Length: 184
Image (cartoon, rainbow, N blue to C red; front, side, top):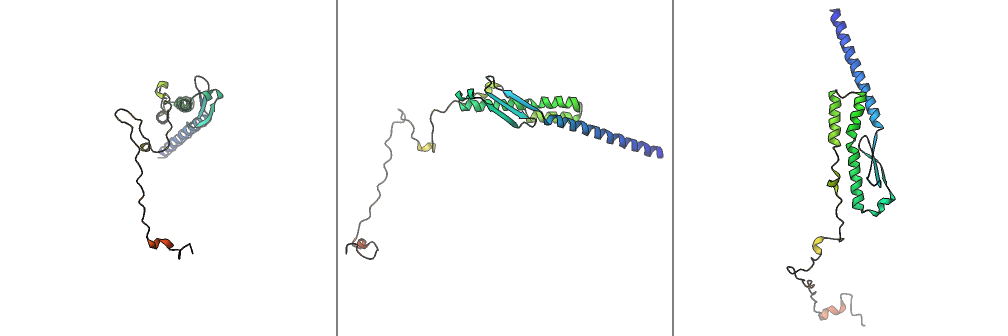
């Protein structure tokens, strides 16, 4: 019976040692990922974005050369670059795991799969064409604005306001309830 107890203790000690080693490898991987950043630049080098290992934007640089661009184009480029930088995070995670934990571990594979679903591949550049500029600025409800006249929709005279009916004055109206006539 003592052999069975000793064997059980060795087995528990081995499990404990394996768990501690695995935890240390995952902590090393987490520490390595903590300082990782990804930086992407626009083709014309007017915009630069940096995201951390969690995908959060940590730096944005827009050069003076971008001032000639439409704001819709600049904002579209910023968003595209952020998505592009974020899409590189799973490969950074996979490299860090390969060096610390290994990629054969089931948990490591789940972590990588989760990162890939959180930060998918960036859409192709042509899918993110900036919107066309708006030619007319409208302030207020759209239904208040008249539509331009056409043959099918001839110009209409604006509706005339209804006249306010006037009350006829009577003799009792002279004092206006102020206690008598003002012409005394």
